Image (cartoon, rainbow, N blue to C red; front, side, top):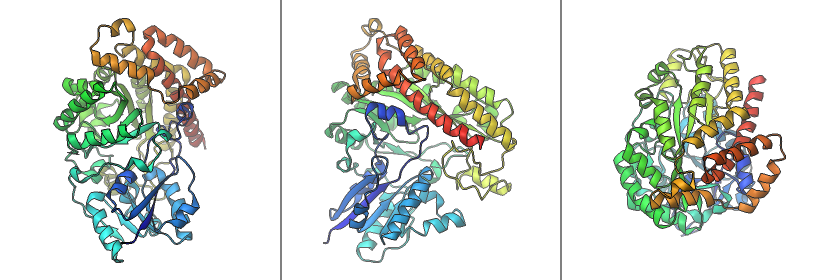
Length: 522
């Protein structure tokens, strides 16, 4: 059986709230996290497929690698569109066969005439989930009769999913490692495309299976942040609790080598056992789609898990457990009134949501929102969806006058990331965290002492961080950051690493804010 040289390419991610460019450089990393999808697909390939992975967020594409390859595997999301197009141009110039899958290909296929023309540059499309479609493609490809599209829509059992191939990357290039525990979400938010791709019945890996993957990360020698990439980590509470009991014991036994973060729903605050297990397992932050403080808007968008609870109380409960809440907010809903901008700013401020990712509504392909706007004749077909909601180009006609919406959005972003407002929210957050003082920690359980010590020492490149910190203090933003770090010590010595991290993250958010406001001003 002949060897087949495979080049897997992860596209370049443009600057966004998620990219954390400045804080990454300060800590000596090259990008946020590795391309878990490609690493998992690589593990599904037969032994005669010799894989090299090129992450364009770590280094530029080496054209010699392209030339040496027999086939190129490519993935990406809507935000990667421009980078994907450049990669396809390079592959076409060199006559390379391209196989592509992932969220962008999934959503764009059959979506519009322009998207179909762009996708024609891809030789083979692996739609839906690879566990179902990749084996069929590989069998046909080996026989020289591969079809262009493989689109088995069945939802595979995640027991079929192999551990990612961590041997394809240099772990210390990344600020965090990444693993997946589940797919799917039981909710039906109008604007979300997750359920269109992965279904409404949450599927999970077995506890033994997931823990083997945690052990695989541990075996690389990497220590630090670990992102559980699930779109709704707590969707299947019974299964996630079973896994967390094992993970908590594993973490405590090893002194908490990993600080975890994930995406979940507001309803996690209503389950005390789940919240406690997440803290004991080492979760330090969670991204929650809050969307809007307006109950009418939440009802209209079917965001039931938010309008059915007191969101402020839920957020504070999560924070007081020791988990930072990172919030996603959207402007441009039909139900938004002119006071929505002030209400969002007030909600973000009162709840100490330091990382508040506010974006304009985008009608994603195949969502219920897109279908409704299409029926109402409100889509702007010339403005393609690019998945970057910090771009002020709308792809639909909003109920609020567009000029007023964009102007209000710009004000929300500017005020949210004004340094004074940013550090005020950070102080609220630190004031809610438990066991920040050594005197209080003496009263805590043994596992919490280990977790607190891990938070204090869990930096991969301390000398690089110290150098960047000194350099930073001589910048215009630095004095305010220094004062914040010093004042934060009133909450306890264990705030030090958190306040330093929040300061560096603040620099990044300011830069993204400049990009957004410059776009809006054009």
